Image (cartoon, rainbow, N blue to C red; front, side, top):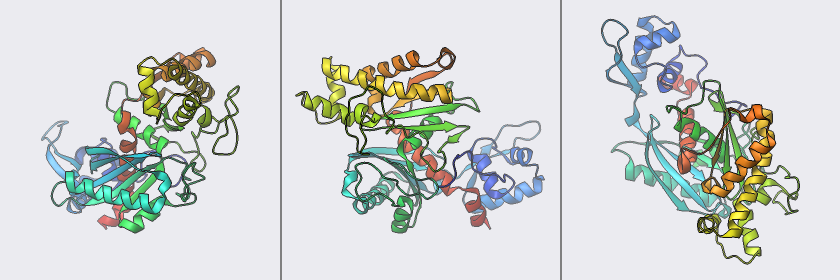
Length: 400
């Protein structure tokens, strides 16, 4: 993946690949729609649509909406010609999803894993798990066409390589997409997990009353064992110069304890507000907790220290986010990840935002928890690999 801003693919809508994108995006559902959007003659549209039908990219799906005269034949992505898998990796677990080629989620599951066991073992497991999902939930004859992966660490969007990921020995500098593609022969697309959660949230709410406006911006905070952030602007993920936009993990929190972070500095947001940091702080206080879910369970039972630490983590996170809100002025701030399920954490974030932001920023700012919930990451990874699979240039080559 390259570039700084992934907007809607397809800058040449008159080509077969561009026409396919028009149908995928919902902007065109018939040959007549395509002719209106592209300015092509009906005969040229028919020729290119026939090529897409023959190649298995599109199929006819009954009659569409008439704009006067005979009702046109509706067109849609041929969802039955294959499936793609998506994997949202964490430090100690992964969520998998299986999607048809229209982007419909067919099945999902979560399994334990250790990202620290190294890329060879983890990538082999991802490949095997994806094929197992296809065998269990795909239709007979459907082939696995691609895999999308959300990584719990920075990914350089210009090279596709991991950049100094925390607590991930053996992963630094690895082109994960290329490594898995060489192992499987499939189309593979990889990005940072927070970016894909933001994209998955955007897609999940695209056709709801709460959908962003056409030029809207969304900031998604992935608050789990660590804390990350993804940004959607103008319909796509904004990655910055080489993929680091939204990386708030190592922002220094003023007034926070001098806790050593994995980056070698002290007082980073990740080290003083992430789920792993809360677990360690509770253990030091003599409270037995195994992971972040244990912390949330204690808070639901009104454990005073667990509740206090979740609220403090929310205040620290909100303090960092307040600067981003003042600078970026987004339409929506979404809190996701396991800490987004904790009322005390969410309350702390809200309190800091309303305290530290200008009224003109918060007046129309929508602050909420994730609608996609645990599916945000796999939905984003599914969208990413489908965009790669249906890249207009690649489609044009396949049709030719």
